[in-house]
Length: 111
Image (spheres, rainbow, N blue to C red):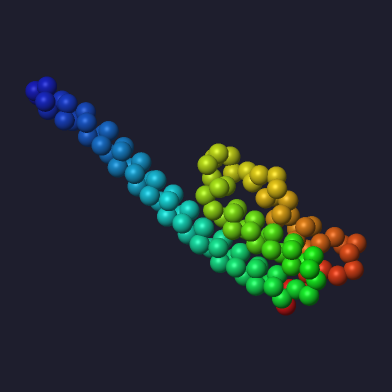
């Protein structure tokens, strides 16, 4: 075996590792794009729901929830790799904020 053959054989696993890493990154990018699109559609649905609310406060809360859904489904949630939503985003998505307090006379209408 010549030195060139040894170098070529040694380079093969590195090339395979690089190809595998590229495929992995492509799969992550495709998943992020799909998640972002799903979040965009969900946010649009919540915005339509907000527009039908007779109460200004309900429209506002649902509008904020729609923005939070879109943001949470985008790449903003990924960069730290910790999978944690920032405090404001988590607040806007919390059930108590979206549906209101049980002490309030009326909840947002889901029709």
